[in-house]
Structures are given as structure tokens and as C-alpha cells.
Length: 235
Image (cartoon, rainbow, N blue to C red):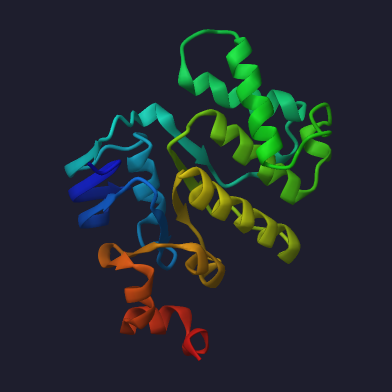
């Protein structure tokens, strides 16, 4: 059974149709890249998947034991968030709050945070102030935080936005490893189309309506894929 199933989803934003007739599914182990120009409905879809906005019509359902609060979410950062005055360990630990209702961290939570710090190659930075880190380090801290909320699926909104090429490549290597080696399903919105598409197994292309949904290989061969990615990608 699919982790997420969208059936005939119709969503609005400020009284304007943002998405219509959207039907697709996310299977366990997928690396789904969501593409589309600005205003194509990508952000609205993310809000729907997170339960922050209900469809005006149609349904978004979760299966295979997935609960909505088990989606690890990495949002786009604001400047205020980049200046957050907390330690790296505190930021990562806060991801455990989504998994239960206890107002304190358990030993299991602390072990989980430590494991995810190691996965994101952040050992030795636990006591550092989050706002003192580089942009790439901050993104890895936030990814470790998202992993504390899930062992199944990550939802990433422009995870490499503003990063330099070295930090971008590092982030993609970590995501590839999480998907291929640990079986974590990844759903990613990105404007870094070429790099994202290199890792993706499936592509969802939006422009209010669903323009394409299928394997990355089929997308690359399609007229839409060639146009959006550029002919040089296929040379």
C-alpha cells in the first residue's frame, strides 16, 4: 500500500485555484522530485501533505502505517530562523517533540538525536550555537532534526536553496544515502532541477494541473522533460 495517496485533489489559495485534479501516490522507498515553475502549486501541495491545508475536493490518505505526524519536514529557512539562539543538540532534539505528547525528552529521544547527528556528520558540533554555523551545516542540523521525527519519509522544501556548490553536493550525497541505504522515502521540491533529477526515481511536474507523473527515465525522454531540463541535459 502507498505511503501517501492523493486522489482527485483540488486545492485553493486565496480564492484562486492552486491545484486541480491531482492524482498520484508515493510508495515506500521512492525518491520523488516535485518540479514546476513558481506559482505551479508546489507549496500548496506541501501544505496539504502536512495537514496544514485541507483539499477543497478529493482526498489525501496515508497508508502502510504512516501517520501524518511521522513525516519529517525540512522547510525553507527564513533569516530569523538562521539566527535562532540554541545549541545544535537542542535544535536536533526538538524534532522528537513531534513523535509524542510528553513535555520532556526521554533517553530514547537523546539516543535518536545522537544517531542522527552522526548520520549528518555533525559530531563535535553538538554544543555549538546554531546561528554560528555555516549555511550547509545549518541545513544538515535541520535534516537531523527532521530525521528525529521520522524513520519513514522526509518532505523537503528547497533543501539546498542558498547553499554553495560544495555544500549542495554534500547535502545531495546525504539524501541519496538515506534513500538508497536506509530506505527512507524522500519527497523533495527543488529549483535545482538538474541535481535533484539526477537522484530522483520519480518525477511529479505541476502547473496547477499534473503535467507529468512517472519514472525519472520516462520524464527525461518526454518532451516536457526535455523542455524543462534543457536539451543540454540530454546531450
